[in-house]
Length: 474
Image (tube, rainbow, N blue to C red; front, side):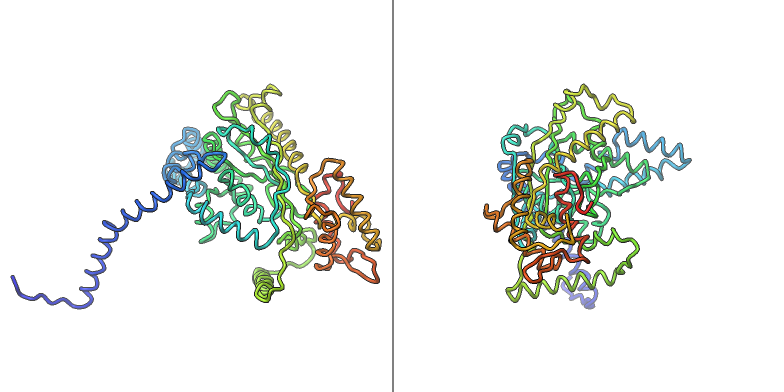
């Protein structure tokens, strides 16, 4: 019994590894889960006390539970059975497809990551790149929105920075849930985006089964009170103009809306504008389909050069931010009031009638978004040059035109963001940025549009073109 047992080193290492693994799983892991769960619960309590809209229990439910709920939803199960019958496929195979779709769509919201990591990251990125401002908020109307309502922020889409900016600025009120395209399904971005509460959407999917699974998830989240952010345009603007709305997600939200239900559905129009859009060159390329496109590697090289050049400017103390980024929050639109005023009941409408009504409502939302898009210095000055690109203007004439345009916009009810409340400074900021980017040339005291940069000038001018109903250069 007291004889020494000798083990080879490899066996000892295996046994030690197994013992360590057992200690980790049985002793440390439960304690760590308890520690982090306690931290998250404390954070959720703090957030619910601070936010204007409490985090709904649906958002805090474990992801696997939501996947199971979506998979076993009666509408989804009926659609799966009908699809299998129509296609002559095995029901087991169809169920596997439904499960794959559910796992692809459903997020895994983590309050700690959203409010501690995501918020700090979004704030740092936004403030590093831009002078971030909130220009206008209809505080009185927002204060009247019931905290039990489902809130949907509807936003114009100028840049992928929209996601960062809106999440950062709305974090003092609520946690947003975005619909994100397939571009973000790369490791490790996919895991972070899921933890931030976003759900993935296949754009323009022709699979009816997939669309039913997606529709049911959106309806479940909407019914449960999850605050969402939607870009009705469906993609980034190419020429700077507001795009016609695509109303797939809106249709999913509205088709089951009952004015007599427990929750109202409230849409808040949000207008975003930038003095410089990071993707402007990429988007403008789409206006010239005949021009050669840089390959993937060339695009990576250009992106790396841009990043390294700006990093060097930061290190050397010569870097300046990309101007102003401004967000306006407009007057909320209650869906309960809207349908009662028009005598509508969306669940009772057939497909054609419902889509027609959703289209009308989407157009109204886009109009509301357009009215709150802020007028920034670059857009203001770019519009003057885009009107008559061949005309040379003195500094005095240019300043007079800018001040006259400001008065016109203010008289029309537009929301101008005037830095430092100084119109003179706003004009100077806009002109300086356009000359630094060589969109505008100066010679002998006269300013004129650079002939090879007219598309870029019109791109920025078009961000406010809807305020007088005419595209720049039209």
